[in-house]
Amino acid sequence: MKKWWRVIKSVAASAVGVQSEANRRYDFEQKSIVPYIVVGVIFVMLFIASIITIIKLSLT
Image (cartoon, rainbow, N blue to C red; front, side, top):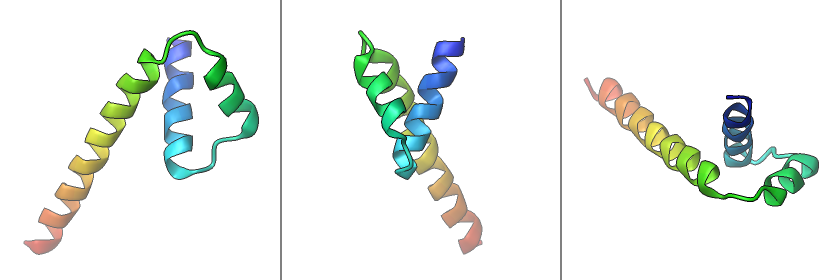
């Protein structure tokens, strides 16, 4: 569970553009890219859903 939390924090930080060099280096040293892809896709889907929700709420 701790590994997934670190992946979530890393994806969120990189999406905002505040990823530290040490964390970026750690991410690229990992053996598998799959957790980053899974969390990244979920992050993008949640981001798009929140933008759509905000737009729909503002238009009503």
